[in-house]
Amino acid sequence: MKKISLRRASEPEIPTASTADIAFLLIIFFMLTTVFRTERGLKLFLPEAESTERILKRRNTAFVWLDRAGRTTINDNLLDLRGVTSVMAGKFRDNPDLIAVIRADQDIEYGKVNDILEALKEAGVLKVTFATEYERKGG
Image (tube, rainbow, N blue to C red; front, side, top):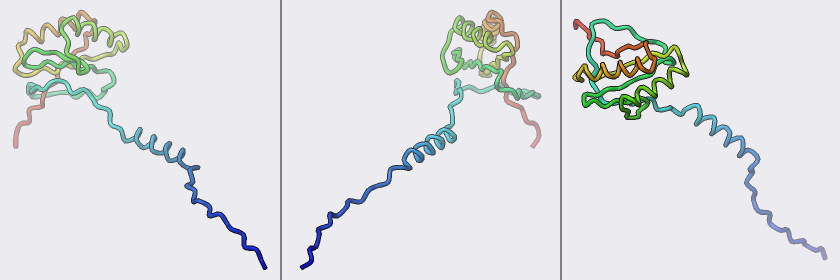
């Protein structure tokens, strides 16, 4: 009589050789599709201008936000005048071609804008421009 050998049923295996490749592809996918948050600044209404010039180089710009309550932010951090001077002096040391863009609310008192201009002058930042909304005429 012939002996029948009992076969042990092998358990199914899940191949794990490609999991490192899949993880690497997922990391690359998320790195490419991630959007970095830019400065939000303060909620404000910019003054209108009849003519304006667009600054195309965003690499050499630093934004100073002033709302109608007189609050000032740079890089989404609330600052006083001394803080504006120290932050902008540091930015100016890192990049001597820095252009300060003042985004001031249309209803702010000019004295507060003048204080910011003096703080920028004290920091050594002499290239300053004001952000405006372009006034479109006609229909």
